[in-house]
Length: 308
Image 1 (tube, rainbow, N blue to C red):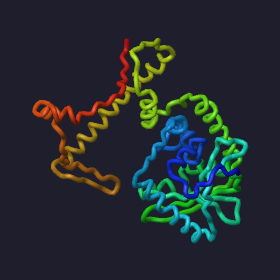
Image 2: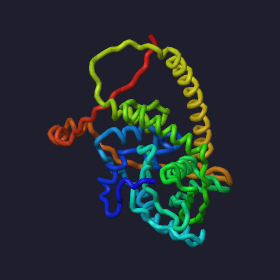
Image 3: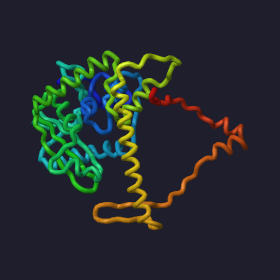
Image 4: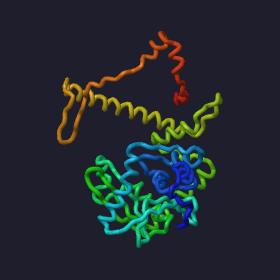
């Protein structure tokens, strides 16, 4: 492995900019279409724009805060010693493959990935299972560093701690490298969006990428079969939605005035919820100056399909 840059004391803004130089471990699962929280389109947008969006939430903060704890628990449980790498590495043959690893294992050609998980996701780690995008992340790190194996440790909040060893799989690494190479060379470098995957994330990326429209009409070619399939799916979805609502209505009749019904398998709740909403129409009529002062215009594109 080759050292791209030291990350010791590096500002987050600069770290995010360095990440734009290639595909990192947390990008690997998304590029392969196996990350339930991120799409290939989101990775593409991140790598091809100048913006460095610093996304953060409580779960992400806790993950960072508990990283050191997970590493210490791993050392206790596995009887091994780990150290911080404090560097971003890259694969010499494929420089677009980069890695900012959590820890390296002392005395072994191996590393450690530290994870935290909600108790609601405990089944994803049951019986030695590892979420697919995390396993790909570890193989990505092995591809970059040349490690013989990678360890992954997870703290399931309030329940348990687990760790396991992932052996180097050359076939997996070859496949992953080819997918990442194709993504980097044929999409990122050529500025061509990857194929959509039907996710909400892809929706938001497309909306962001093509935010504005121009008053232009173009021929619609090559989509007749897909549009026909869309119409068929809409009919199926409508029937399923009606069936779903019917079941919900039966449950509401069963509950009556009760807020809750439960058994060993399900918990059904139908509670009264109060909310406060601004009466924009009245505000506009009675206080037009205030309405205009705080009115915020947003622009979005409305997508519709009509049969000829």
